[in-house]
Image (cartoon, rainbow, N blue to C red; front, side, top):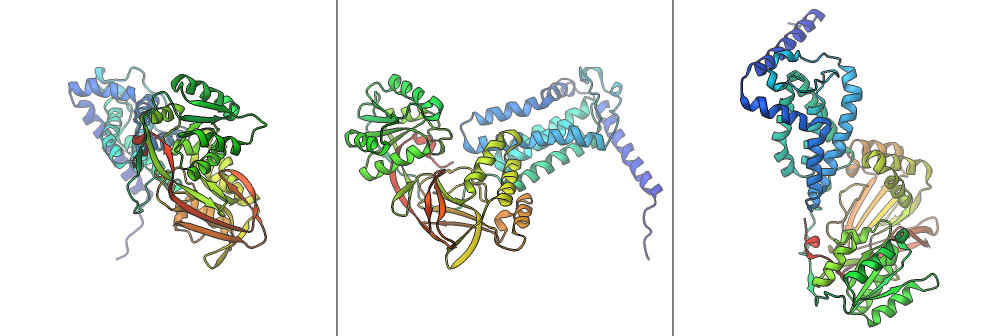
Length: 500
């Protein structure tokens, strides 16, 4: 027998029944007499005002020194920020609802300042869920530990009379949904499941005063950062020799001369300068000490020396790690990345905006601008020819997977990380943006990712510009890259170079 469609009267009765259940649950909590509820719930609710509780936890996670915890904190805060905006500026206007009558709540349990905004949904619950789920997607252990606290924050809003139970449930749903959607747009940073050996460390004689260390520094690098680095070396390593670069000097000649008389070669500058020093250090068999004095200092950060203090500590302790380099056309050394097409512009656009609108939106906008305005390049590799606007090649393996590689947790895998977006097929731009927004770019037929010891391609339509470590190195019709396994010995704090 055919069922009749529910009438509007039936829907109203269901809605009224749910409202009645909601009110009864609220009343049951209000009627519960407990000193714990009277003391803990108001304090917990106030702690979560303006997300202070979650921001404090995120700060502790960021300061913990654990890389996974730092990324989890960033993802949690980003999810929280978007959720707060959606909840307060959109959701509360879509579902107008009065707050529960707070006179029903025991006096000791009431909030000092009763909220005046709409009741549906609970912003506290939404923020708690967004932060906790965001953290858990990056670090499941931390997310599991935070889940009970998030639940208690939601319950505190009921116990103090600020919300009905359904307000909290809807808030949890909104926060969870936004965190999960964020993970689809920008996948969590995870380790590649590649079989690699344990890190290789070499013990070097400790140099507490810097004896035997020759450091080549450009005082003007990094808008004056180089001069600060010089002062720090002079204070902490008084016996180290410092060679200051002038405009008339040849960096390569200075480095070769310094390496000839050094037991440890030091370099202070940006990644381009470090690449030159790395090539010479590897050829002459000298350990390299990197003092970050550039703008981004990606290489120094990835070896565990984001500040000169870590480099100085490694010199004093004599801790050396063996890492990979990449050889380009048997002539140039690459320490970070190589690219063709518009990848450098994509990175610059993303980095310019990510601190203002967040990395997910910045990456999506940068991708859209790149696909709309840049000229593609046709390349041939592995017996196939494709058209691409975005080509990335990294020294060792980067994370996460997808076309937004962020960092390296290992630099000694003996592999190249190659990622290519194909733009020559039908509706390719629309397909790429759709896959990016749905978090399925890695599964798209337009996305190619390889982890190989060597990679080469031919530019089909004539020489194409190739950028090495962010700087254009001329135009080439043939490009060959080869991983040089653990050929560079770098000074770095050993704890920073262990797998995390």
